[in-house]
Image (tube, rainbow, N blue to C red; front, side):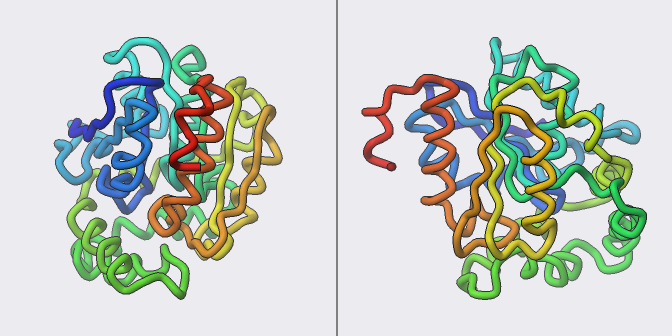
Length: 263
């Protein structure tokens, strides 16, 4: 897998992108959080610069692939997942609890398998990508990931990232993993401390999706990020990063004086 890394000290922070993105989505976190942590962001199998998988991948397979990244670096990781990445992070926390020091879930949900209509819509995305091609697919879906007031340059960056990241068959496997996912029964078994964030203008999973996750987890904090859509980590990186650093200060015991420039 292709991986972007930054930082040479502190806890390991593994970043898992959303279903229409890549490691490029975590540019603000790689730039800023790397002063306090070793930040690793993947291109999921079959995305962007990562090679296509040899066969279909389930949610467990994506979680196991993330687990390998942590094992290769030793110890455990604080796992930050956005949207689909959040679903992978939660499955990783239940499937490999020894590898997960904490979970940070942003603009996510318990999975699309909680609702038949949502599951069908998720499965239909692979056909839509095949019919439209990556660029038109991104132009149609990308703008909705941000708030209505997002700056045009950010909208363009999100669209360009999606167009460069998604392709079949990887996207189809990811969509099926989301369509099949219903984590409601297992969320209460997540032992790691967690932080759940959601943009106040998320038009994709919505605040209710994040509330469903936060309400079922133990040892959790729930934060609404002001003036942000579904990609709060990109639209409001300063606010988002400040909350992540506050979480790491508690869970990874980063000295508070090291955080003062950001907070």
